[in-house]
Image 1 (cartoon, rainbow, N blue to C red):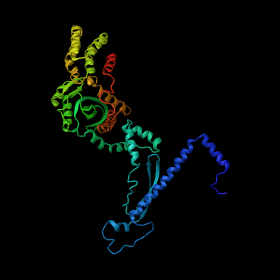
Image 2: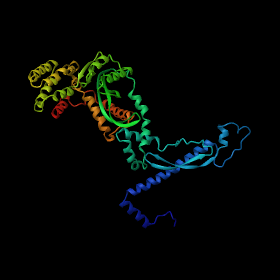
Image 3: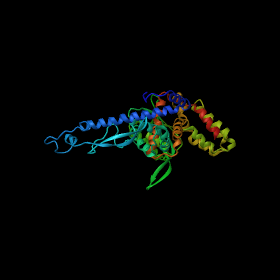
Image 4: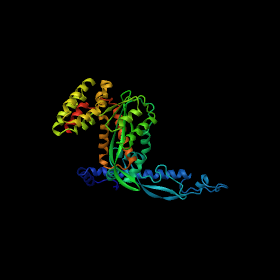
Length: 428
């Protein structure tokens, strides 16, 4: 009987093992598949070398007169020979690590196109690693799980190198021209991240702001206009941001409104850079400033009066409620009244625009949601590796959000601003 025939007892034993630990069968199949891949890749590289040399193994072609002169070309191949091989571990998506024989030539001129020098995994796996990183897992986290996922541990530095290749495309999108966009509303805000920085040759971890600008075009589609590192509390920094948008082609004459918090000087800078635009002060930020100057026992009552003002049916009614507020609280909490007085006009600018946009224009909620998503997705990383790393990750998140916005017209996906306002004031 042939040795290849499995006996009945052996077959029964195999079936029993499968029943007890079925995952072993898949492990064996994976090993067998990897061996098949290793053999196929090795043979393909050998075939590449044959084509490169222009002759089969052991085949010789004596040089004709003049062929040995000079370097390269046919003369080089006729004097070049196979020179054994070396092993390299190469990881393939859905297969795992392969131990491949890389053929060599005597002159060291041959380089396989199938597996280039210094490559350790295929391009599709490189892309997957980049996407995993951009989805929020840190380079260290990817390194820790890579062994169980693909059968080979990938160092944090390798992941960083792969991600560096994504930067060119990310930068092209982040700094893309804006000539064709007619932007009518612009939201601006900043969000802080813990980031590794190098100052005077020393590395440290600092809280670094990223300044974000979101535009709404004439068709009601939202888009990211800018993501730029800078001091979010500096009006001059914001001026440079606005100038950059115009340099990239943004038509400043079309911009009608800027929605922002109460940073001193920001409103003035915005109006100077966009002379046809008005400014809407975020009502939540304005209410926060008023309530911080209000005694704890009075906060619920004052918050109710603020809602009456901000959610009135018209600007005329809002100003009537404001006057009632001022008359009632002027003697008791004058600093709170003064705080509201300083911002009341800019808090009610939204009344000058279409009513269907009111709930989206009252606050910076649209951009606060973006900042919240940035924080959620970068949370597992704790510390960003630097400015370029931050751009890669934040722009990836921004791109995904833009795709979602295409199916969610401006103002339609947000919760009513009144509900958000209530939640805030109840927790203040």
